[in-house]
Length: 159
Image (cartoon, rainbow, N blue to C red; front, side, top):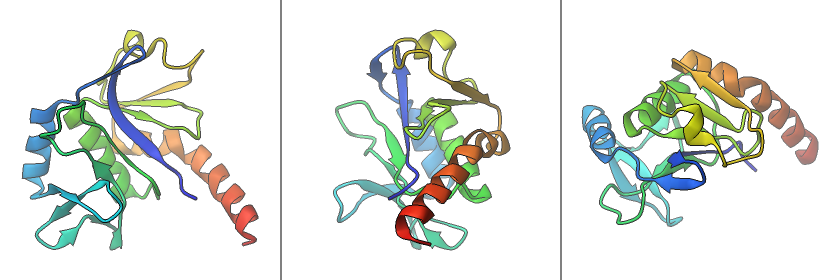
């Protein structure tokens, strides 16, 4: 069970390709690359191994940039730590990707004005959209829902 987010570029109900050049520059600046993993997704790794946030391994994933289909990514078990939110925000801005939050609301989080309201029409009926301009606003937009998710998870797990 995890708080998951998906990153992709959309226009209406169509998935577009992420900004591959922007993603490549982002990864190069951080000395990271897309690496295959045992679970058939592609995680980010660097010289020290798989990407971590706050000293903990992350399952943040990104399609290989040489993929024929549109590139997208996501994270299955988000913690919404300050370090993780900063990375996700910068990654999505670099790739011109919106964050889709299936736990909703908001259903969409648009970092750095990567999309317009028209780009998101047709994805959901009356979606709630959060427009964020930095990592702190991203954490705030998702934070209340994350707290609800944690309470639900703890109840299910008997914690």
